[in-house]
Image 1: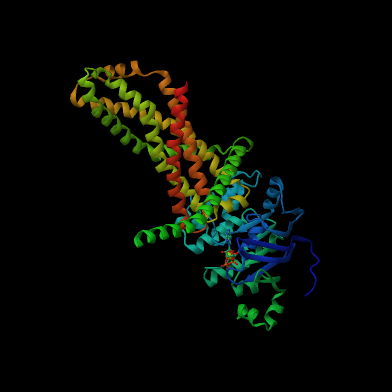
Image 2: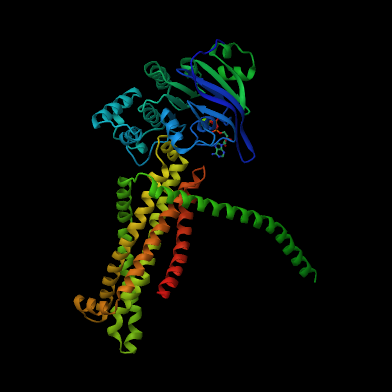
Amino acid sequence: MEKNTKKVIIDIKDLKKSFGNQKVLDGITLQLHEEENLVVLGKSGSGKSVLIKCIVNLLEHDEGSIVVGDYELTDINEEDLVEVRKKIGFLFQGAALYDSMTVRENLTFALSRLNKSFSKKEINNKIVEALDNVGLPDSIDKMPSELSGGMKKRIGLARTLVVNPKIILYDEPTTGLDPITSYEISHLINDTKAKFNNASIIITHDINCVKTVADRIVMIKEGTVYKEGNLEEFIKDEDPYIQSFFK
Amino acid sequence: MSKKHHQANKLSLNLSSFIPTLKEKGILFFMDVANVVAYLKIVFRNLFAKRFEFQEFLKQCYQIGNKSVGLISITGIIIGLVLTIQSRPPLVDFGAVAMLPGMVAISIIREMGPVITALICAGKIGSSMGAELGSMRVSEQIDAMEVSNTNPINFLIIPRVLAATVMIPVLTLYADAIGIFGSWLGINIKDSISIKLFLNQAFTQVDFMDIVPAVIKSFFFGAVIGLVGCYKGYNAGRGTESVGIAANSAVVTASLLLIIVDLIAVQVTDLL
Ligand SMILES: Nc1ncnc2c1ncn2[C@@H]1O[C@H](COP(=O)(O)OP(=O)(O)OP(=O)(O)O)[C@@H](O)[C@H]1O
Ligand SMILES: [Mg+2]
């Protein structure tokens, strides 16, 4: 695999995380470069969601180090953590839309918390554009309870993308979507990157999505990095465990 | 004899399995205490340090009032009625029926109003805070807030705690008024007395020092309801069943604490 010459913006070294006696992450080392789509593969329950939650410090890691931009997350203070989180957009596996707010308010909330001053019109334009991108312009005044699971997921994606973050962490962006929408979302991830040059970590089991978005792939097994490489290297690999993902 | 022996044996068996669980429970209890202390510390630190979410505060005030005003009206009237009807016969025996309005008013203002309001709100408001924050925790909405630069303590907990602290006294005064009105209705079942005369009789006996401690007490009641409801919801576990557990234990804990606070308040007022 050729060396990526771009700057490293997330640098994870020997990351360990346990819940009680259960070791979930047992020494993960990986890097994310600028303008790169990194796909993380792994069985259900292998700790993928835990990994990206550690990156935004929603979960505190036990050992190892995580560096995001210029900040080391171990014992980070509150102000620095705010700076880290401003750079990062996070799509939750379950979308995590705010139940008590409409779709519009959900997106407005994300925008208004950036501490930048947008005019009402700017906010409105951004929201309409973000909803257009995920193909749901009509649901702007709906409540989350009125949306289907897949629609929630897409609104969650719109809420993540509307603030235009430098780094995006996608937790299964296409799971539960039909093939057509999955295809569109995969391309949306690429288009976003082409337009704004952001870097992303994409957790997914959807091989079509992997094929569309992956610049590089990391596979996690038993809490460590099992294999790292580009798509070709993974497809060519004869290891049955790896092959079972690419069937 | 053999039966006795058997029983003793059973007892010792139970004890030996009881002591480790007791130890475990003890550890869990102290962990809980530590968590509560940490929680209170964070809440108080955020109370003064950070930007205040005024919109959320108003929204919560409205919701607390809106949710509980109906229930408090009905309960207030009935409490007033019942107190009056029950107190009347002994007072008639002593020929002191003119004391009835004052007596009922005092017991409503000093005790029934604040406590009944607080207990109703613990059931209505405490549980809904527990359930709401609990479901936000379970569905990762609180996490989502945190990653979009919103301190959930600041945005969710402080407005709720403050709203409860402000609104419970207001609702208490309202319950007092309704209860006293209910008392007037109660008197009018047997007697006929104008509301003006009734209020006159009632408030010659009510002292300023009856009202002030009761209002102060109800501020604490409000704070307890808000703090407990939010604590239980905010610290809910991971599965959906945690939402129910959070709501339920919010009500139970808040009600118990309210009674304890009431006891302390009575002792303190007694000293004054
Ligand atoms: N907050 C937590 N407390 C306790 N255990 C947790 C917590 N979060 C995750 N776990 C445990 O960590 C393990 C990994 O969970 P994680 O959600 O990261 O899996 P995943 O790789 O994302 O799986 P999936 O593909 O199904 O989403 C699971 O066994 C889970 O039970
Ligand atoms: Mg996951």
